[in-house]
Length: 173
Ligand SMILES: [Fe+2]
Ligand SMILES: [Fe+2]
Picture (cartoon, rainbow, N blue to C red):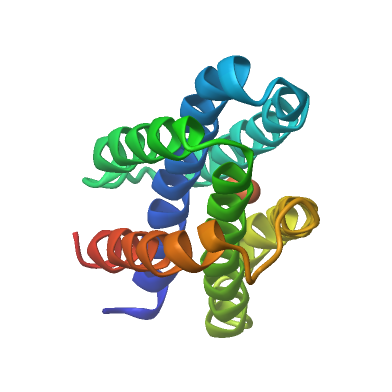
């Protein structure tokens, strides 16, 4: 993998990941409207952030003349299913999912920033632009659900490994 390629690969994977995040929130919004109405405004706000993140990465991909990731639609459909299922399980499951996903996302973004610093400043700029909002999603969701709760303990390993797998796949696609 060449040096410039790493930045483009990361941008491509992050772009697909944002579509995954949008889809998770879409699934959860559908279910929360039925089972956890008070969470709906927050989920809609988070989804609008994710749309902004996707637009940032889309613009950067476009500038580089790179196509979207092969895993783009997988991220979207997987995210939607994850959102619908966890949404069906209720408010604690919704927040536990957000905490699990955003923890993995934050860990990767921070590593990406370390790997790309001094190598690909445009990629660093795009990633830096979204980190604060991802942390907000993590922290706000974490304030709704205890890490020791049943849903956190059940969903955390499943959601974390699914998110890791999608990122792993995307980096190699
Ligand atoms: Fe995002
Ligand atoms: Fe997020």
